[in-house]
Structures are given as structure tokens and as C-alpha cells.
Image (cartoon, rainbow, N blue to C red; front, top):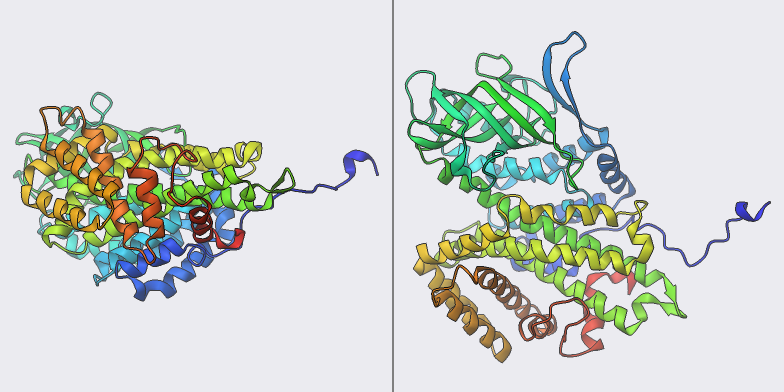
Length: 554
């Protein structure tokens, strides 16, 4: 045996697999119970077991190493515009649909259903993020379609039963021939991006115009999410103004609709998921909502997908933290595990604190979608964009810090950290960039003073005896009152609101130690660099946070 044949490696860390994502996450379990979904723990525990298995982890890796492929023509030259996926994608999607993450709370509404679904979505995103896109698009579209009266399409008869179904049907066929269907979205065009009012795609009525009636669309979409979906919600200009249309893959007469994929986007991350550029050539679509009210119609869908952006980023933050804790608890340096080195403990504890706060906020937001009480409406309307801005931004730097904690091993493609890092920026961009979210916070505050008052009073009461919290709350209220520069300071307003909500939730947790640490580390000082915060109680807090974040590695 030569030296290069010897296998005498030591002080190496095996991949993190074979664990239960639910059982090893006390913060998630506590949030599930606190927000009213304790009845779903058995199914969440089973999902956590599956997602932590080598089979699920391998499927997540394979789906990204073998991204979808665009096949424009069949062997004899007929246009098919097919998107072909690796089998691992279908394994993951089958499980997602079987668990109802795409439709469960709509198909079987019940107290805690939104929270249970959010917890499952958050765990799913830790293993593979690309499959979250068709999941959230479908989830957000269902309440929009459920309100539509029968017209040239009868949604209640033909679409909703298949949207509610827990059967993943990836066949390319008209809706009548399918057991389950998924929905995508087409909003942005190359000249406009977030400024959808500049859209140029035209919609001409086939006969009588109006809600529920058929139109023919000509134009393009620069980002057509999940192009293999059975239908898309699309914005186009009608005579009455920018309107929303339901554009199925197959027209009502059974023929393939006039949607032509130009190419699939070559994205930084989210590589398992297909995003396309398309052209419409007389594509048939039914108008949704009132003519000229397309943005208002599609914004409801986007509101739910923005909630899922928060959950998706919380998922990436959690999984990156788990990877860092797993590695550092097993890697020796200077005579002891990295996780026992004081400065590294500080960094890891700070990351654990960030993850716990994101999880708590994500599930609290989900509960707000179950009620129309004034406070819940305020949280839903004002806090959702603030959380989408803040959690998605924080996740990017947190994942980078977790990668650094794993050293060079975290930077190579053998492990999951590069994929997590590539995924991290997308939620801050999709469904409205950071600036759009912050301006939406201001818009919501101004349009609904009663909701703002209810939210402000809720936060004031939750501050308890913390002078740091009360000071931050007063600063936020003063910023919202405005001195003529509210728009200029919109990022500060949104970020501080998210931090106050996170602090309020953590302060309510048993013992209060995590909440006190969050206030000290996030509200009472200007520096938010990980490992450069003052949690107030030194290593005692670090020990508590690390034990909660990753019990097996303690």
C-alpha cells in the first residue's frame, strides 16, 4: 500500500443526515404550539423525519445538480415546449403535494391550519428550495380563483378540486385529464420589472369583454415562474387598463395554448426550479377580477407568496445554522471542538438567535392569516412586507457567516453550504425587492390608520419592563409619524418593525432569556454583525441558545 492509498483521515466531519428536523428544533416546536397548531405535531414530526433522511437530502442535492431542461420540439418537429426534470424533483414534489403544502388550509380550513402548513413549509425549505416555488404560487392562487364566478371557465367545477387534491400529476395534459394541477405566475416584463404598470402585453376580448370572459394575449413575460404549470396568473393591458388573466397551458378547446418558451433562465441559485422567458401568440386567457384592477387581483396572490418568502429565508437560515453547529461541534481545533472556543460560541449563538427569531416571526405571521380581527389584519398587512424585507436580508449575511464557520470545507460543492449560499438572495428579490417592501410598509400604515394604531399598541404592551424595547418602540413610532423623510428612512422603519415583532415574540417565550438576549443584541446596539453583539448574559446565554439550536451537537 502506498501513502496515497492509506485512509487514515481524522478530525473530519461526516455529513449531517439521519436526524429529525422537527424534534431537533425546540424553537419551531414552541412556535407551533404557541400559534395554535399543536394538533399537527404528529404529522410535522413525521415530515421532519423524512426530510432529515438521506433519501430526502440526496434528492435535494440531485435536483439541483441536474437542473431542468427545455425541450421545444418533439422528435418529428411538433412544438411541445416541454420542461423536463430529474426524477429527484418529482420525488420531492410528490411528497410536498401529498402533505398539502400547496393547498391544505384552503382544502380543509381549521384553526391552526395556516401555522401547521407554515411549519411544514419551513422544514421543506431546509432540504430543497426550488420546489417551494410551484408550491407557493399554487397556494397563493387558490383564494383568488375560489372567488371567481363561473364564466368561460368554471373554476369551482374544473380547477379547485384538482388544486385541492393531494396527487402530484406531472403529465402534460388538459385539466380534464389530470388528477392534480399547479399554478404559476407571469407579472414582469423586460422593460419594467417591478414597475408592472409599464407592461405592454395586450389582451383582446374574444367576444363580450369583462370578468370571466375569454381574451387573446399577445406579448411577452421576462420571468414566467414555473413554466410547466397547468396555468398561470398573468398581467396584461386590456381596454379598461392593466388586468389579471388566468392563462391555462391548454385552451378550453383542448389545444395547446399560444405560449412559447424562449429559454429557461440561467440563475445564480434556485437551479432545480424552472423560470422562463415566454412569448404569447394569441394565448387564450380568462379575466380574473374586475377589468383594470389587475394589480389588486394579483397582489392577493403575492401577499401569500411574500409570507412564504419569509418562511423560505427562515428555512435557509435554520439549515445553514444547523450545518455550522454540526460541523463546529465535531471539528477539533487547538485541542478542543470549535464550538467550545469562546469567540466561535459567540458567533454560533448569535446565528442561533437570528434563526430562532426568524422562525418565531414566520409562524406568527402565518397565524395572522387565519383571522380578520384588527390586530391580525395589521400584522398581515403591515408586518408581512417588513418581515419579508428584513428576514430575507438577514438570511444572506447569516448563511455567509455559517459558511465561514465551516472554513474551506463549507466553500466546496461536496457539501450543502454553497447551494444554501446561492439560494439566500432570491427571496429578497422575488415578489418585490427590499425597497418595494419597505415602501409597501409605509403605504399600509398610511392607508389603514386603525391597523397601525392596533399594531403600535400591541407592541407597546409587549415591551414589558424592558427600557431598551420601549426606547426602540418610541423611535419606531417617531419615524412612522414622519418628519417629511419617511420614504427616505423606509428601510429603517421596516427593519425596526421586524425587530420589534421578533423581540416581542421571544420575550413571551418561557423563561424570557432568549427574548432578553435578542433585545440586548438587536435593539440596544447599532452593530448587528454576528459575534459582535452583546446578549447581556455572556456565556450563559450562549449555552442556552446553542442547546436550543442543535441539541445533538451540545
